[in-house]
Image (cartoon, rainbow, N blue to C red; front, side, top):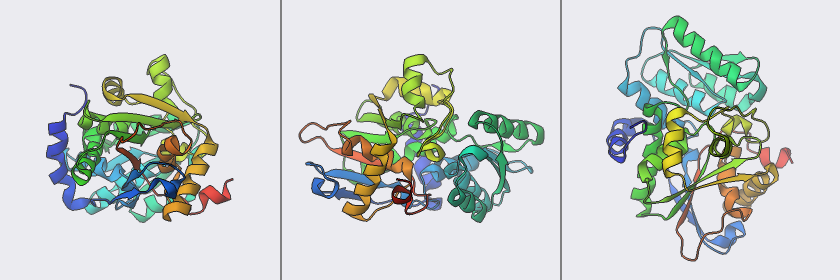
Length: 314
């Protein structure tokens, strides 16, 4: 099978557990967000590197041989921070290629602080991916892909297992999508037991376009969520899992993301990065309307952004 099984993910969880946080669950009354139903939030933005990505980073490095050349990755920020942190903790060096066009200073600072060597790549996100792949080929460094390998999906899928254990069960989960590593892991674990809903912006809609046009396309990511969700296309393994197990694809404009972030701050004093607000915006915009009694969880996937981005950028 081109993507992990629930058993694969269950076996991965105790392996990475010593290196990550079990992030909290918070259930808010609807009034806190301007809604008429309660919403459960998975606060994965409080993870050790500020995003879910550290799960896949550790699982890759703990289950694969790391050569003398170390680790190489490509990232807009969250994956790079996770790879840099995991590599440093496990005694490896790391080099992170970042597209200059979507680089955010807060995320660059985080990657460097965790011990990564950051290389700013000119051109598109696709050009950056090509540069990173070429470096891996030339040096023999272990490539830790942000979304397109089974080990990455397996590690990311552990967040779904954690949600299930913490909540006792949910009906629906809303997940922000970029390259598909997170939603690919989540839907690989939940399969058909939980409705998995993808949420993207109009300017980062890799999943929605892939389902309409096929996976052989490129999205020139832009807009508020580009540094979080700016994958040029879905991963091959992610796409197979998504086709089989994702129930719905929602696409929103940037204004809905700003509004969701503002509501999250006003109602709960929580700040996530734009990628986190995208998933919540499916509810606050009305694009996803739960049935009465439907148990909905929103995965707040990351928090590596300037804390006032949703105010300053409006």
